[in-house]
Length: 411
Ligand code: GLV
Ligand code: MN
Ligand code: MN
Image 1 (cartoon, protein in one colour):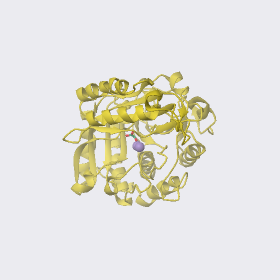
Image 2 (tube, rainbow, N blue to C red):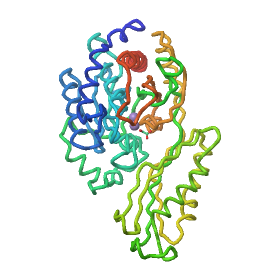
Image 3 (cartoon, rainbow, N blue to C red):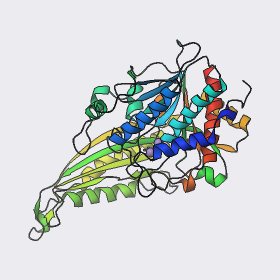
């Protein structure tokens, strides 16, 4: 097939209608999506994808950590497949594109191949990685982390959400969508398409971002234990106020985590205060820290400051700090970067190279095979927000670049 021939088979309207169909599963009143990992909504999205796949003659399988695979066979089934995909789960106030776009852009490529009657030498598999977001179960990128051998299966299956429901039990409760499959099989190359989730492509007026790598991230879960006491009678010297200790620690960290060139990312995204009564001094506080930076040495150095700073601020309270995610910066493979660049140039899209500020499953796949990513713009760079928005044209453009990239890698 000539260069661009497969891209021409990508159907904008078909991809868009699938995006909107999945956006309705867990759709919110404000136009976003709440489809937390391993909920009934996540299960329904998996069933819908599997139905579409089997209707087109593709094979669906799933593994013990809840990853779902859609395979279009190659002429040599013994060769490691080329893989693409992303995730079906969303943030609690998520949008219509984060994750699901990469899965459906990959699925559109399989359909385009089918419509064109093209045989590839290697199979191409579209994967939906389980719990990329880390919103319900921490850490995120759990499916890809286990697949790549970076996270132990049993420990991840034992992780519980706020209500005590475990990953393992929640996976077992999902509707079955395909045959069971071992994870960790050899992969020839992995390419993930995603919205940029930042403002750079839009600002440059470019359609395609050729992603060079992903910045480093470290997550922490912090529990501070004070002592419940009467709010009206207990003098300051007698208080063990877990919330005040948490606020002092976070404030001290905020000073450390603020840099002049605004590269450090420091977020406390979840906090629970117990017992949660207006007139009882808080005896327990739980909160999370998400810290990121592009430079490996800084990720190490500033991440190592978190525990001592919080301990120093805890005063009379007890404190326990657990690092729940450690992801050093990753540089993508020149082979995949070149394949994406060639495809983008051949199709004539305006583009530039850029690193990813967000985490992606590609970070873990990069440990086991040549890996790269394709970004498309999103409105105002807004993501992890119900207002997240991308155009049908840009979604199709990313799928066209993905199509030509996967075709080149699968021959
Ligand atoms: C994924 O959504 C991330 O945490 O960057
Ligand atoms: Mn994502
Ligand atoms: Mn996300």
